[in-house]
Structures are given as C-alpha cells and as structure tokens.
Length: 122
Length: 132
Image 1 (cartoon, rainbow over the protein chains, first blue to last red):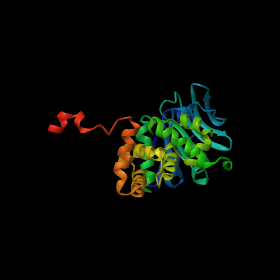
Image 2: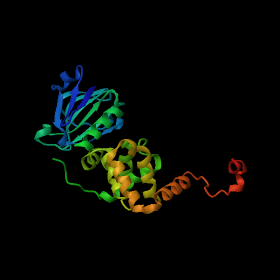
Image 3: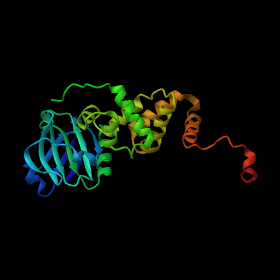
Image 4: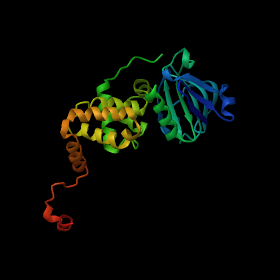
C-alpha cells in the first residue's frame, strides 16, 4: 500500500508498512512538472511487471519495488490490485528514472482527483 | 527511454472516444481502452499520461462538433467531468461556442434522441400537464 501526497510543487508516493522495506526505498518524490497524470486502474496490477531490482514479487499475490520492462522503470506497490492508481511521469533525473508508479491507495478516486486537480492548477 | 510512437494518434483517440460515448467516462476502464485501441498499457500511458489525458485528447477533436459522436462526447464531458474539472469545462465551453446560439437545443435534442425518448409528442397527449 501507499499514500500519494500532493503539494503545490511536488508529488510524493510514500510506501507504507513493510512495503518500504521490500522496495528498499521509502517511496518517490517528484516535482509536479514531471507528472503527466493519474488514473484509477485496477487492471494495471495484473500486467506483466518485468524484471525486479530490487523488490518483492509473488506473482498473483504482491509486487513491491522497482521493476524494469520495455525500457520503462516502474515503482510497484500492489497486492490485490483492486485500488490501484497509476501515476505517469516524464522519466528523467527528477524522477530517478521512473516512468510511472503503480500503487494501491486507500481511496483511488479521491487520490486521482487530487493529482489531476493539482496538474490543472500548475 | 520510451520507444518512438508507432501508432496513428487519430485512430487511437477515435477508438477511445467510442468507448467513452458508449459506456461513459467513469465506467470506461483502462482495460477497455487497451482493448479498443490495441495499444499496450505502457504506450497508452506514455502517450496520454492518464485516462483523463486521453479523454481530453478526444474532446479536443470536438472543438467544432459535427455528428452524433462528437455531441455524445460533449454530453459525457458536461455530465461527468465538467462540474469538477476546469480544463474539461473550458473545452466544453469552447465546443458550445462553436455550436453557436443553438448549443443547448442541439445538445438537448441529441440527449433525448440518444435516450430514444420521443420529444415530438404533441401536447394533446398530455392534457393534464397542459391544463396545470
């Protein structure tokens, strides 16, 4: 699980509980200017994730950590996937090379609205 | 590095617009969009950023709405997104301006037509409402 926190200038994906341990990172903070949008997307959790480095992958159960696929670096923190949100980024130094974050949050709809509203305002 | 685009954006956006108008914005899943456009999920996100980004791209193509599909997309935008999304509202306003003074009747007529509601029922069929 994760929390997505939006300020006037940044977006932070904060991994909660043990997920930070499996992923070997607390999360990811990027400038809003590097965020392209957010989508509630339960199906994204079922996609092939690629090669994990580092992270935890129990196919069908959980995927937590950094995964590489088709040249895209993705931060995953998903279990059942039902409440998955996809945050698309402009990959670059500001995003530590990440192209997107695919994480489960408590309230996907509110999270997606908050991110997209912040993007409209910027 | 993302790979260069190898798809026709207009075709992808049209396929997405068909999903949005058939089932509505909220009910269209990214799985639906992946199926309809034939793109990989990663390419879809890479090109449009989000489901909303894809919807905005579709709406941008209705700047001068012609035809039922364009009016349907405008209706979906006005009903589902515009009340709480400034960017969508601006796009809807622009399209309405392009429709001219007739915008509300065009949209209203299309709404009833789409619902298969007969709007041309003569007054005599509703004697009670006429008297009130």
